[in-house]
Length: 310
Image 1 (cartoon, rainbow, N blue to C red):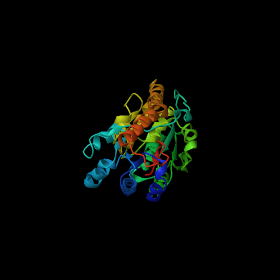
Image 2 (spheres, helix red, strand yellow; image 1 turned 180 degrees about the vertical axis):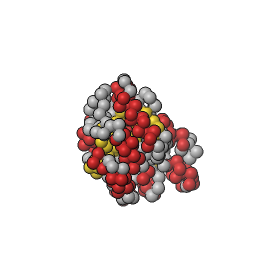
Image 3 (cartoon, helix red, strand yellow; image 1 turned 135 degrees about the vertical axis):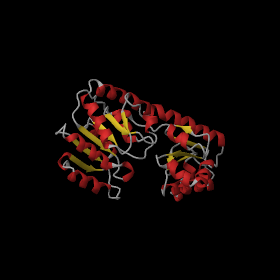
Image 4 (cartoon, rainbow, N blue to C red; image 1 turned 90 degrees about the vertical axis):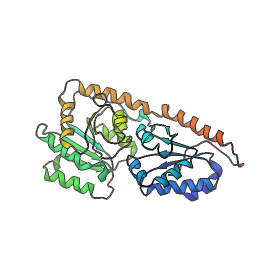
């Protein structure tokens, strides 16, 4: 990554660097160091529901990184508020999504077809989805759950499979693993209710994808979720790590007249706010303003482009 910054320095005028918590933070620091060495302005973009907690443990590093950027953006009001102690002028630029790639199927008369889309990692609490399935199985014996996502190797996938067998719903669970991004809409179309079980979150693209396809979203109310979803309007939200509350919310969606159709219709309307046709012009204005502010030209071919380095 650092070598890329040096080798390609004549091909970009402004760089954009993604910032995550944990070990990934080091890559953002390295990219920022290299960009300063080649005298290129850069924009930082904050990501991840765990970034605020990590920043409280490493405030000096976070403040130093953020203060060195021309602009710092965030895709959610949650991170905008949480990260202000480290830099006050954070710019809100939501994640972009090509909505046209996500065909809408309005949900009216639902099947108990549950969909989960995330990496198998403990912070996303995947075993909760299995407990929800088990809680529903008595009233909805044909209930099924598809859990799509790569195995991150912390034992979460194995715990999901073991829990499903122990609760007697192993035959109702499908775990196809990670799938190509282009196949996500096809998999989402196989479900009617989307479960977001996470304990830590920001503005998850997986949830926005589910909204775009018109699924009825039931999510834990953590991190940036209250800034993204409106309970009873475009989704139902429940406390974290409460499988029974989530199962009850799913029962509502499956049985309450008119609820599924309202959530599905409003879900698509919410997702359309994240379309690239809305987000891209804002990025273009921001990047051009950064270049204009710096006003530097070292004689190379400088295109305004998103050089993702972190």
